[in-house]
Amino acid sequence: MIDNADVKIPQHEKGNLAENSLGGTELLSMELFRRLPKEYKDKFQFVISRVHSIEENKRRLFWIHDLAQDPAYNILTTPSIDLFNKLVFVSHWQQQQFNNILKIPYDRGVVIKNAIDPIPKHEETETKDLQLIYASTPQRGLDILVNALDLIDRTDFHLHVFSSYKLYGWEQNDEPYKPLFERCESDSRVTYYSAVPYDELREHWKNMHILAYPSTWQETSCRVAMEAMSAHCAVVTSNYGALPETCGEYAYMYNYTENKNKHVERFADALEDVMDSYWTKGVQKNLDNALEYAYNHYSWDKRINQWIDFLDNLTYELDYAEEEIKKEVTINKQS
Image (cartoon, rainbow, N blue to C red; front, side, top):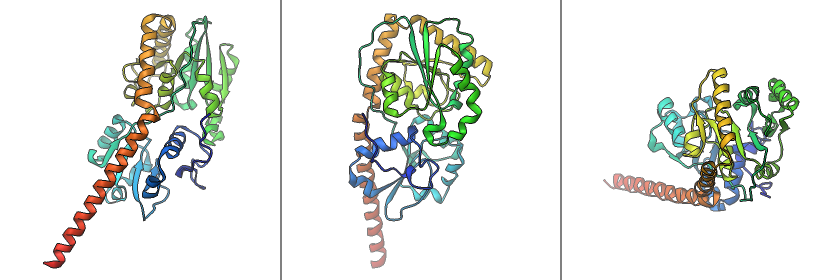
């Protein structure tokens, strides 16, 4: 069990849009704050995704998780951008988007990729029915997945759908997607769970074989893909946004298209190809490599050291810059 219950993060302050949220960004924030020594939280204000307040007595980081098109980032203009000592991006793709769209110079930011507690390694035995999982909010491609099921004329699988805005405390946002949820519930090949506690979802990962994620969302990073790889699951997804960067060479990707009918067909073809070959040596070797990649590149055991090194180096740079300014002021006074 991962205990984040007592970890305080900025998003959960009263009045914030995400004060009741346990989505990916909030989990990530809690996981970082649980590990980060107190001295760094005392020195730095971590502004995460949205600017809710500014602490005048601290150095500031803007840890950005969303797209450059988000109006929340209109603040990143001169002189407001100078409120922050560094911008922290979660992928190189995302940083490039902020450079292209908002003209943010590369030297204003740093990329520190997201991290996970990998799903514990477990025994996997060949089974007749493959277990598929979708674990994201419904607007990110659930409609493509449900429609693709109509093109898949087979019963040797079962799909587990974990999808609801309840995770964010925004249950009312589920309303437009109720017909999709009802289609899931009416298909004998599908179990719909709505939202479940994170520890429960982690247990489900141990029984899964394929992440079925026909993403229609420009992911800046993808926690669910990281967890899938760490759980020895094949990742079947589009090549939209930062998904290729997140998954390395290990996902089973197809070209994204905005045409929904074509997207359904492409995803159904890609999914069936993986289902047909899942137990072959080639696929199993790829999943072994993906698991090791997730453990080596996305584990918090690795990432926390990167955060601490970054904060130490930034502290040194800022201290040095302040000393140089003091020296210059002293020289000007003496001259």
